[in-house]
Each structure stands twice: as structure tokens, then as C-alpha cells.
Image 1: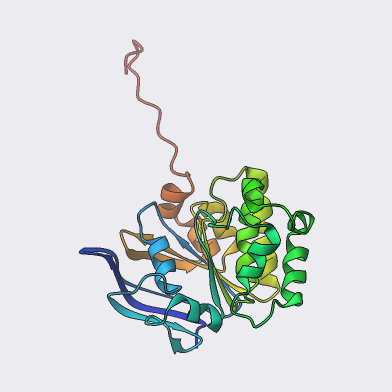
Image 2: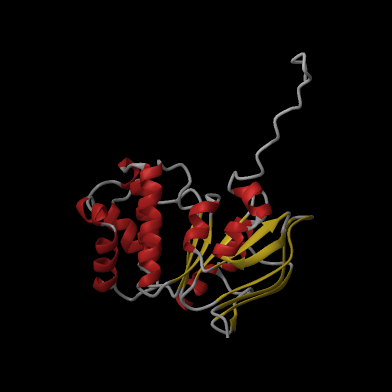
Length: 249
């Protein structure tokens, strides 16, 4: 049994369908990447899985239990949390207050969870009394991830964690994603930085126009010519134009 199973998922915004019968799975302990261009349906898929959107049809099962009709706060209690695109931290609260809100489903804030996120993100430990809105973009992304980890999830959904960050911070974020996974958290990663995502992912799916177009092991998709051209900026080198002896093309 897969930890997450998505079956024939159809999600719409009013009369406009964003997902057209999408199916995929995530096994316990994996990092799985969900790739695609803007508008392909990646964020819609995550929001449907986490309960923020209700599907028109299809199923979402987490640890064998059907969750597509459950509200988001119940899904968090089952062990599935999401780090949204754009971070959505509470900018007027401190780092510490943001983290404690991440553990709202617990009867009391677990010290072990706090210790874990401060070990993963030492910079947050240094800034725990700082107002979150004054953090840098990279620090805010760290806080969004740390807040989601406070619920001690089995499955973490990450939506574009590298968006808007400098390359050095992108490397740091992906290093931490790998460390979170090594510590036992399964990860479903939506990411436009396909090269970095495929280096991390055991398996990956490519969404195009609300449908799964390709799937396979991360390294295999990284070598796939269609993926290389569409998402990695790699393709056949264009031929030089033929020139006549007089130098006119």
C-alpha cells in the first residue's frame, strides 16, 4: 500500500477543469517530484491533496484512508502538511509564534519538534524572537518549512520551495529537503527548478495541461530528451546555416 494514492483526480475552478483524471502515488520514505510548466495543475494537485480544494471526482488516499472529503485541519492531524507557494508566514508574529502555530493540532507544543526544526534551521534559532516579516526571503522559506514540520508529518508537500531565492540559498534549501527526507519524512515536491528536483527525487511525474504526460525514476526523466528540452533548457544544438560561396545564407 502506497502512503499517498491519487486516483483519477478531477478538480475544477467553477466550470474550468484544472486536473483531468490525474493518478500518481508516493511510497513511504520517497521524495517524489511533480514537474510542469506554469498552469499545468501542480499547485491544484497539492491543494486538492491537502484538503484546500474539493475534487469534482476521483480519490485521494493517505495511509490507506480516503481523505478527499475531509477538511484540511483533519488531514493535518492525520500526518500530512503543506508548505504553500509564496510561504504564507504570519508576518506580524515572531518566528517562535509562527512555529508554535504549526503545532496547533497538538495539545501542547512538542519540545522535540522545536529542537528538530532548530537543528535543521539554526538561523531560525538565532532569530526566534524576531518578527517574521523582517526576515530575508530565504529565512522566510525556512520558517514556512519549519512551521509545517512542527506538526511532525509523515508526508510533507512542498510547493516551489526555491522560488525567488538566490542560487546559494536554493542549494541550501534542497540540502535541507534531503536531510528532512533522510530523517524519515516522505516528500512530494512541486518545483520548476527541474534539474534540482530530479537530482533529489527517486521518482517524478510531469504534468501537462492537467494530465500526467510522463513518469519514471528521477535520473531517467533527467535523461529524457523531451524533459531536457522543455524543463532543463537542454536540446539539440542548432545547425549552422548553410552559406553559399559568396557568403550569403
